[in-house]
Image (cartoon, rainbow, N blue to C red; front, side, top):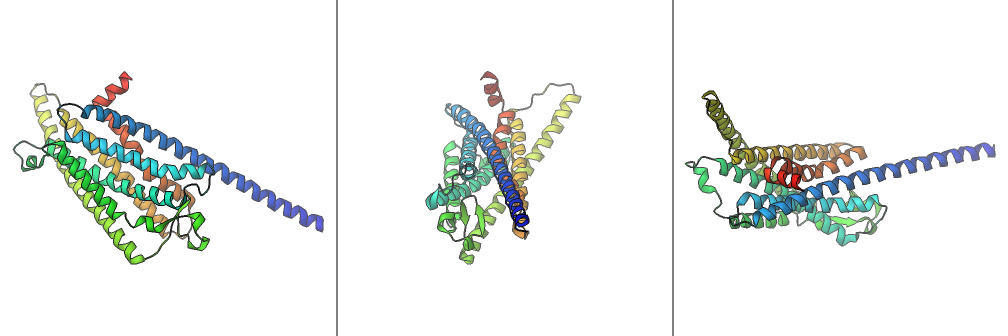
Length: 321
């Protein structure tokens, strides 16, 4: 009888240890995948950043290269702040960041996420103004110099720093918490729900920011689609007239910006859907949380390779190197 109980206990311990080992292997694989994608996206964005800085050194400092420099820097910041806690967690180092490290990284990630929305929206607006007819009223809104863009980017930093200023008060490291206090996991950094009124105020500001900039993005993108359609009709007319016509670089750039916008909207709304699913679902679905983490970085990773593929100068640099 005692031998049978001992065998049953040994079987349960063995099954538990196998399950634990399997969980460790899965966590390691997810961590390595996360590290690979983060490194790949960082390399692409650093390449875009350095090349556009080189182009921007010219005598005529244009607005769009400056916006793309800021977008690449924002993507790098997003990948670093999101990838660092995940990398530390997958390496098995617990509580390495501490309270200050957790607060700083999560705060910078929220700011970088807002800057990504604002910068992509600004890019679509400036590109729509660039390809608009010279007699159009929209052409009057074209930035006179890159310094005007710098002022707008500074405003974006101030705006997003203010909207995310409540985040450090809610983020703590697991070492400083009781298990009962934990409500939402951020690797070793946890979100502690307190002061719901203040939380909903800042959440409303964040939603208002996202809705406003995506509305501007949608309007300017629709205007670009209209102009590209007119250009396409003009090209068809010239082809039927057997006249040669070369597509202006502004039109090719507009197509690239539209592709970037579609890429951004796909990852943004898919991430929103997964967040809503994780919030509403009563079960702690680890797969949904992992997918959500990858979706958060999807635009930051993919946008650099869209730029490298679509931009002629960057493509020439790739072939040369």
